[in-house]
Each structure stands twice: as C-alpha cells, then as structure tokens.
Length: 418
Ligand code: UD1
Image 1 (cartoon, rainbow, N blue to C red):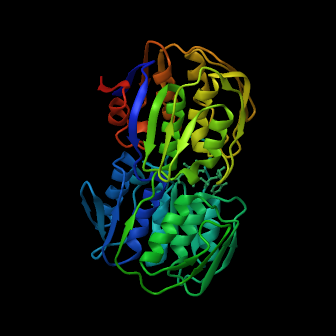
Image 2: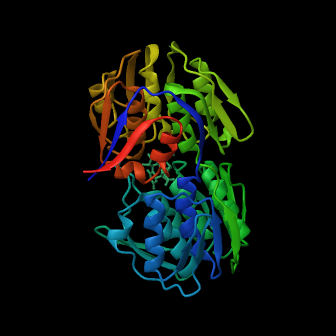
Image 3: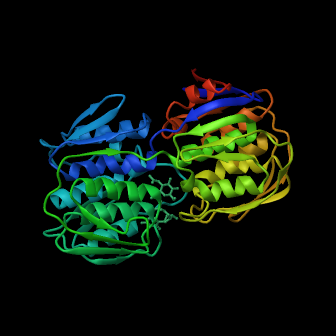
C-alpha cells in the first residue's frame, strides 16, 4: 500500500512548473483515434489516468509511443473491439472512447466508466446526444452498445452544461453527415483544447468556449501535432498551497485567465499575488486572511475541482466562511478528515460552514477522491507534526510528480510503500 507522509509547517519558496491538463489529455488521447494517421501530442502529464487510457489504446491495437516530450498515437492498424470493464472502470474519461469509436466506426461496445465517487455521475446526456445523431443505445447491466447505420448532424440542447457530454458529442459528430449544433455546451478551456486538436486534424468546429458549438462533419481527419494546455486545477491547487505555506512561491507555465474565479477570491481574502503572462507568484503568507464564501459553478465560475483544497484555506480565515457545492452531490468527503486535523466545519445539505482560524495538527487521513486528496496534501503541509495520507492512488491519478514538485520548493513530503 502506498501512503504519503508529510511533516508540515515548512515554508515553500521557489518555482513549481505546472504540467499539461489532465482533463484535456484524457479527451485528447481517445480523440486521436479519429484519424488513421499519426497524432503527436506534447505536454502530456505522466499520471496514472494517462497510463490507463494508453492501455485502452493497446487493446484497440493502436500504436503508442511515449517519450518525455510527447505521446505519439498511430491508429493505422486499429481494430474496433469491446473495451472490457477492467479498463473502463479505471477512470471516468474512458467514456470518451464511446464518442470516438462511434464517430470512427459507428459502433462502440464498452462498460460504465469508473472515476471518483463524488456523485451519481450519470451519462444520460452523452447517450441522448449519440441518439440525436442517429445512434441506437442498448444497455445490459453495465455494458453499453452504441451503434448507428449512419450518423447525421443534429441540433442538441444539453439540459446541463456537461463537460463530458459536450466533448463526447463533439467526438461523435466530427465525421457525421451534415451539421451538428450543441447548445448550452460547457465552456471549459479543456473543451477548446480538444476542439483545436480536432480542427488541427481537419475537423470543422467553431464556437468551442462558448455555449453554442457548431460542428460541420468531414469525411477524413489527418495527422497532426498538438500541445496540451497547462492544468488549471493543478495550478490552482498549488496557488492555494502557496497561500497556506508559500513565501515567494512562483506557479509557472500556467494561464492566469483560466483561474480568475480563484485568484479574485484569493485577493479578496488578502493574499498578495503577482500575476505575469504565464505565471502567478504568491508573495508571502499573511497572518490574517479575510473570510469569504464560494459557490461552485460551471466555467468561468469557481471550479468544483478546487472547492476541496480551497476549504483548507478557509480554515485559516478569520470568522465564518461558506462553501456551497452545486455540481456534485457528494463532494464533502474531505470534511471529516479536516475535522480530525482540527478544523471547525459543519455541513448542511450542500453547504459547508467553516469557522476559522483553527490550528491544524497532523494525524492519519484518507484521500477519498482525487481533489479530496489534494486537500489532504494542502492540510498536511499546513499542519504541525506529521500527517499520513492513505488511498493516495487517487492523488497519483491526477497530479504529475507531486512529491518531487513540492520537495523542490521546501516541503517535507514522501511517498512510501508500506
Ligand atoms: C468533468 C471533469 C471533472 C469536473 C467536472 C465539472 C473531466 C475528466 N472531469 O467531469 O473534474 O469536476 O467536469 O467541472 O473532465 N451530468 C448528468 N448527466 C450526464 C452528464 C453529467 O446529469 O450525462 C451531471 C453530473 O452528474 C454533474 C454535472 O452534470 O452534476 C456536471 O458533470 P460534467 O460536467 O459532465 O462532469 P464530467 O465531465 O464527468
């Protein structure tokens, strides 16, 4: 079993370089099979979610070549075969193979995806989108067969601006006959990154990043070279850690505009930031942070994926702060562990009320999901004494070299096998 052990209260100073975005990468890898030629993707993070998707590519007989610089995907000899549950359950994003296989072969056979248990996480909007394009969906327990004689462009309105459904429908529609319009599309930067990749391969997608995306179907996609955008959630996590323990801590290779919902809250709390074109430096640790409230929302609102680490910061604010989660119904699993560390938090329905500031003292905690894990790391770095985190596989799914990156700026943090 792997654990992370942190000796807290060390001042963090120096530079942390942000990796490529997990949530873009996990869609770009399945998207690459839409061509029969080679796709080269650089800035791919080395995380277990990337490995899990490459395993699926191998099942589909797709050639994958990984170097430190890039991931080269060649689907020339690809075969369309069932993706077994043992692969799909490793991560949520395995469902992007549904859209990609449907788009390429008009047939996909796979199982319900896995991923963090942060809510029910249905895929009804994805399936409705496929059906609108002309596919028939048959499900038997966890298995889904999605097939079409012909995919035809359609007007699709998403009841919820779902990131996954927006991308999956884009993947299925890229080679459909005619024009597809997705209304109430999600606007996250990762969606723009995937649309740019597909356009680099010859797709005709406009409007990505707005709530109306137009896809004009094309017959063929060709080889391309593409770069993954920096991970805004990783950058945001390190900014929060910097606000807790940083002194001149530079978060480099990031896009500050992607994180305005977070940085405006940090500034409101009294955290001094220096913003550059591709970096933000946390200038120093303030002893008296102002309390604030956050409510998670779709982009460009406050990202749900930063809610859990942000709660840790609110334990250090003066007075009462509130966190309201509107996207996932089960995203407060980090709270009992923060309380074990000494935080004063009450959860009622979808709102956590945090009373601060409180001293945190190291103890044994659990990473119940990926971002809860990030919250535990942030709390452990702040707490006195030693914090031990179990279930760290969740953290390693999404944060490239987290131990090395934090060690390099002065943290005492170790990954141990026990
Ligand atoms: C993506 C991100 C995840 C982030 C989330 C919201 C990836 C791999 N993951 O997840 O980190 O927390 O966006 O920013 O990119 N919903 C339905 N039916 C559907 C699809 C979604 O009801 O068919 C609901 C979900 O239950 C949830 C909301 O819509 O309440 C948003 O989900 P969605 O945007 O789809 O999240 P993911 O794409 O799974």
